[in-house]
Every structure is written in structure tokens, then in C-alpha cells.
Image (cartoon, rainbow, N blue to C red; front, side):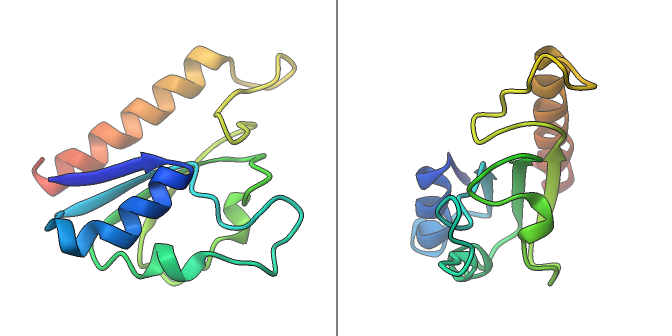
Length: 117
């Protein structure tokens, strides 16, 4: 079983993976910190999942841009360029919304396949 969620649901999935017996966690738009408050990091929740974890994060997510995540290798991080917390990309972006969704689904499918799921 893969536990997963988006935003607050991603936090819950990380916190409960062990007690659920999950083999992995899928964290979509993990809220690393409240917008504008990087000092209130929630990295411990992410790092404490204890199972393989995939984080899919928008490049412009105010709850934590990919470069703000800890670089300890306890999870895999996939950036959706220009994406916000909902993975919406602005019309002026180098990729369209359909491409953003494709990158999300491709990353999840590849990762789940590596797990044997």
C-alpha cells in the first residue's frame, strides 16, 4: 500500500505511514512551511516517514519551493516547473497545464513502478 495525499494530506500520510503499514508515501505539494515563514519548517514530518517517499512539488509553491527542501536523500523530489501549490502554471510559463499534469503522472508512474507497485 502507498499512503498519499496532497498538501495537509501529504503531511498526514508521512506521519501515519508506519502505523498504516504503508510501503511508501506519495506527497503531492508537501507544505514544507507556511507561506512566508520558512523558519516554521515541517521537514521533520517528511523525513520521519520511514519509507520510500516521492514529493511532487511546484517550482513556485509558496509553501516550499523545491530548493528549500532538505538535501539529505531520504526522499525523491520531482519539480513541476512554474507550478504553484495546486500545480497550476501561468499562461506565460514555458510549459502548459497539460504538460504539467503529464509530468506529475509520469513521475508517479515511474516511481511506483520502481517500487513494484
